[in-house]
Image 1 (tube, rainbow, N blue to C red):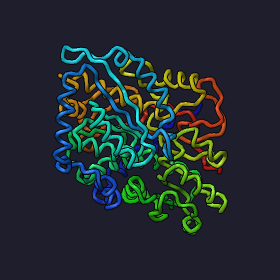
Image 2: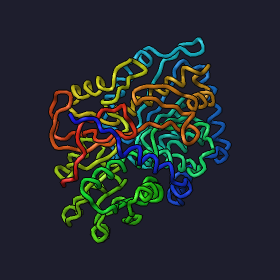
Image 3: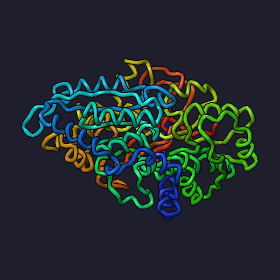
Image 4: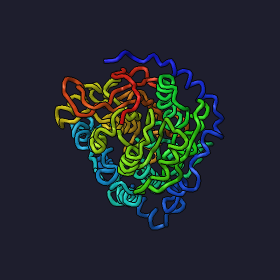
Amino acid sequence: MADQHDGTSGPESGRRLGEIDRRNLLKLLGAGVLGAGAAGLASDSASASPSTFRTMRSSRLSAAGSSTIKIGYITPRTGALAGFSESDPFILGKIRATTQFAKGLKIGGKHYSVSIKVVDSQSTSNRASQVAQQLALSTKVDLILTSSAPETTNPVAAAAQQYHVPCLATVVPWESWYAGLGGDPLKPTKSYEYCTVFFFGLPQFAGCFLPMWDRIQKETKADKVFAGMYPNDADGNAFRDGFPPFAEAAGYKFVTGGAFTDGTTTYSSMIENFKSHNCAFFSNCPLPPTFNTFWKQAITQDYKPVLATVAKVLLFASTVKALGNLATNIATDAWWSPFAPHKSSLTGQTGQELAIEWQNSTGNIWWQSLGSSYSLFEVAVEAFNSVSTPHDHSEVASALHKVNYTGMCGPIDFAKGPAPGVGIIEPVGIQWKSGGKVFGKKFPWVPEIVDNSLNKETKITGDLVVGSY
């Protein structure tokens, strides 16, 4: 195991990040992103019809006497983003076995059982919006939990806000989530009463990626030029406008690949553009199948950056397997790992114990979504335990905005985020290595922790090296 990185480049990068004028840093989320959240998914409840509000009122009256807390859980179990949810069955089994969910909660002197309805967004925004509406109006849930990229989380949050149902999201950059509700990340003062999220944003992506770039650049003396493969969608538009100012402040020149459509099959012109500008570093955030197509073409056309730091792709072993050796030493962010000293607020189980149990149960190496999915239910319990009745949507939503606790993902404080209802968790940098052992078991692909500039509590497990694809 490698020595822990002392973060020499981390504090320096951190100072640079703080010097960036926010107006220039996040011009992000123009019409493309705002439209994704606003078109047909109005965040203002005034857009709902009178009949809809009668249904909502009837739902609340009928739920008032219920002794069951209903939670809806929406994730992309199928489709292009299915890798994010592969750990769902395992985590749901763990959650349902906890005392809080197996035996119920005592709130306001009354005992409540807890039920969880799991719904597949199919990795599409339209489906996510539809099932969120169904949970709100037909299933009459008390809380909606959702995870894994704007394609799912944004329309779910917008529907929850519209129908006045408390909603908690994770694994979505907060800027994309906030803009999807109609907010301006440049002036994040508006509070969306029913919606909350915990994850991180562009400053944390930069604080994770740039220290790795600096270390490799110092070692290789490579040109400080980076390629940006950002699609025309919520994440892509956010990265294209919001990430380059961080890199440019650190001395890197940005070369854009253009606002392409996810699912494009030919990237020759984009690759030639990156090659002609000597783009030694690479950044992206497309859908996983799109990146696989691009990367295979890039390697074939001899575009091989000294370090690729990717977002939204290659986060899990199953997606790495699809690229094989072409994934060697590609780096990305990890929002949770079993190498941080965090424990469940529900049972006291450590992250390492959770990962080992997952490993023994499934035969898979640890999954980032283990921690984030687990913490969704921790936060839900924190909120429910602080209200007088779990069926009062406004009270539960208000409680979510005030949650401040430490659990599987570490400390999360929704009152101190960059925007109302936003809790920040700090990522670390990982690099995929071919073959290795974790907790005594061999795996074909291992995500080694190679940089902890933002999260010193997480142990370094491997050395950051130049890409070899």
